[in-house]
Length: 197
Image (cartoon, helix red, strand yellow):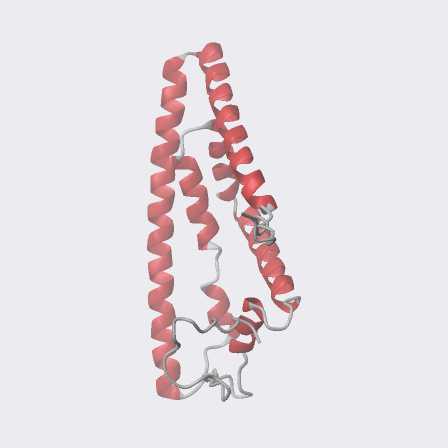
């Protein structure tokens, strides 16, 4: 017995869901291959020393970056309290001092802690301040481009609208109330309203 209705099509798989597992698998194979090549050339104890040294250095970097992040957070709160008491916003120089790409430093430490030579090389690159600042500027521009190119009604557009400030620098808090929303609970047989108007 057929009803004549066609079955719904499966949603198209995104490119990231296809490529990310393949990239992770290729990275793991490359790491294992490099470890065996280095072990054959220098010996297993050298590889073990490299892995332990990378883990210790990575843990030290992450600990230091965490302390710096906590110190920056404390300084920011103190500046905000002082600004609230005096009624003036912190200067751009004070705000720029807290921006030191600490997230990339933590990422470098985590990459050093992961066993493998490729991840250690990437982690060591992230320890260089010029590389961190270049990647930080690139990431900021990418996010800014993405936020400005958001189509109306998207989540990105809503986030951008939420960031609108008054001329004095204060954030305008608000809540959207729909006048056409139905009153009372929805019954089970009623269809759900669409998420976007």
